[in-house]
Length: 178
Image 1: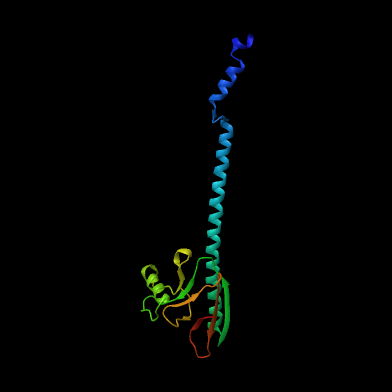
Image 2 (image 1 turned 135 degrees about the vertical axis):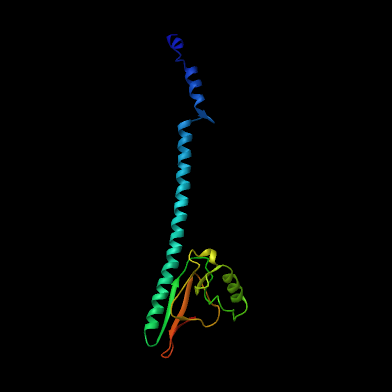
């Protein structure tokens, strides 16, 4: 009886605790579940962010390695090398083009050329297609000769395989698809 006068009855205790519950679970459990959901969401965004950085690094390293090999060939009297590198998934072609000149090809390459001309910088000469899949859609490569405008090299199974060639009397390096 003394407990009833002080308000410590079992029924009053249950009623008080029910006010702090949602769907029959205490507030602290719901708050913990909310925090776990937030941490999982942040983890997914962080993983996606780092995977995008990886894609950009792969493209940047490809460009640096290609320019290094072209410079080596350009500085030599004559050269013929095979250059093979991986690229991120989704990139279908690497195109070498002069966007300030007319296209001298037909078919898929001309479609790619027309799309590149709409939005890319005319000073660049190396393009990744589709540009949505590359965080660096275009760049300027030094010392290369454009064989046809555009000259597109298909990416097969995430790898590009090209031949870097310079003859004894050539001033510029040619890039030939294998």
